[in-house]
Length: 305
Image (cartoon, rainbow, N blue to C red; front, side, top):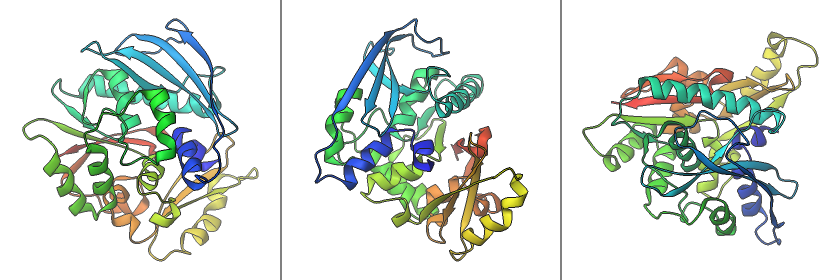
């Protein structure tokens, strides 16, 4: 449930391929396409077509196809509202639309946005802003997943930028900022977009699981009690790891999803930018939090100073 929630389908499927690459993967099934009138979304670029994909019992997702300002065919994963999308799609869709409205209202026209490839594609579709990473990178994706991604999102644009972002996220926070800043252009506003999906994204980039990189998750059933009644149980689990940081969200089922970062993971650049308890208590210098979504801080934007 947790990985489905935060990885939103794509990472979950690719991790399944990575973990079971010796087995023949289930076929990718394109079950339908819809025209531009099918959904009414506040996108910057008009959508030409929607694609609905399923992958066995691993999940399903929707992709919007559009032409950008250079008349290039582009793709971005979107989260349709209920009843077309799932309850999770509905929640994430509302979060993204609210965040994109804030970007459109406050970000300068020459801003450059940095985020994981699928996050960046969605940001470009809804805002028209320039993004640093245009697509997935074949050096950061398991080979067994490349064919699937190419069918859905087109051929990758080889820039090595996704690899740089992955290295910066996994490094100690200040070192990671240096890695990133050296690769980014100077003299323009730089905005970093972080989501809790980046935990699974980063693990996939290194061919590992979130747990092997110091992150773990657990769902705590509410069983009719309020969230305060779960605190002792949650803290007992969190404290099984020395000096761990944690963050939590209420699922649509009203159960509580808790992410835990061990003492090494919480000091990485990603760990310091996620809304962990330890990060909130000790904000990272040289970045400024500009926006944080509701729903447990699922999505946030930082200005790189």
